[in-house]
Amino acid sequence: MTGERMQQDGSGGARGGPAIFALPIASRFKQKHGMKDKTGPAAVIRGFARWATTPPQSYAVYLVCLFLVAGLSFYAGSLKPRKSIGFGPPPVSAPRN
Image (tube, rainbow, N blue to C red; front, top):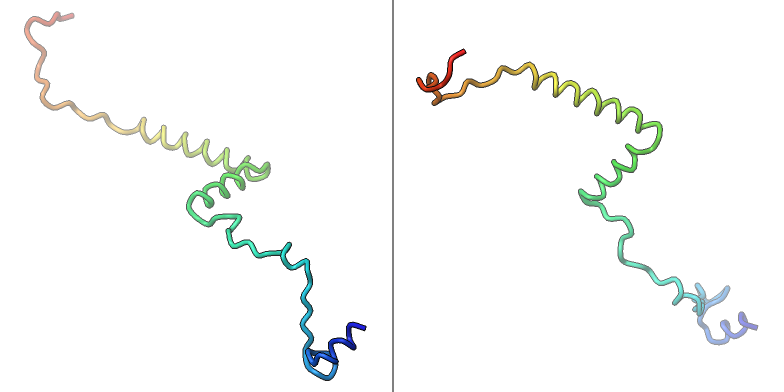
């Protein structure tokens, strides 16, 4: 019946070209223009943190951080302290041992 009506109207079918069907459910599937996941610096940091806290990678990240802290503290301990400028010999009133 629907095919007969379309052919009588000349709006499509097997002879008249492509048929256009308007379904009432189209309003339920409207396109959402807002992005769900943003692509910015905060999203990159959040993604790396999510990746680094999963169990296989978390062990490696922990060891890398441990070696980094140990290496930096060794480097800081091996530096020579700066000599203070402006302080001369102690004053005469200072006790001597």
